[in-house]
Length: 353
Image (cartoon, rainbow, N blue to C red; front, side, top):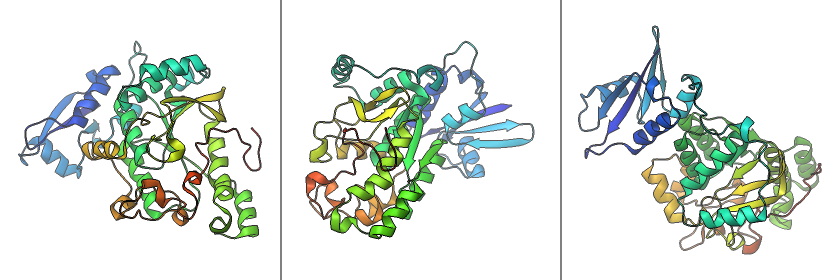
């Protein structure tokens, strides 16, 4: 097997940040020696070997990897996928935390939470992501749906550590959101576990109240069936979860901490760590990161949508509106939460804790 890494040099002569990160990941995992050849794709020189290889394989992302095994060639655009499928971990390397090593991590105490919040008070979000993954590995899951979440996925992928990703399919999402989920899966070469609502509960709700009862009596009941119960099932498989909550997102999130104990859901060992690496970030800083790192985003953002949920309950934002004003817009501002982040213990429809 022969592995070629194609790195990019930008038109202004500067190196590609993603290429640097990928190399750091490989070195940290003790896998760099398994890269047989490095080829440069010089953006200002279409005749450079790397640019020719990119054109030949129809790849427009950097870095990418060509694995030649006999007469067969396979192209990888994700260093995570390359490591998982083709590179053997050295026997002497721990390779970071694994699910088996960390899934049994006990829930943190209040004292530990206070210490962690103080320790990381001025840390960059990616440093927090790296620390959580080092502690929990695949037992740490990113709950993926929006722009903040894909930023966390990008940061997690850059660490080279193992992690998990899940998403909730309510059955009422925009077509653009489904395309977004697939784009992220492809870009990072990751598995995204999808959780669906219990069909019997959905059928019962629709039979009794129709498809749009939330416009009359509030969104809580529908979200309970389509989002809270599936989240409850999803989190029962993990020891920690990372969310994209920010303090400036809404009045209900103004006290979000970097590290919290989630009492609303039970993980593999009981109450679980809930980490919000973007708690101190702003909407502007999140989008600065997404654009700088060329992270995939939901195409609805280009049509005026800022916060995106289910299709019937989301509209494009109006000039000057707060980002959450377009969610459940017919309700009072302090009620505009689906219940995923209330922090209150609750029994989901049709099941117990």
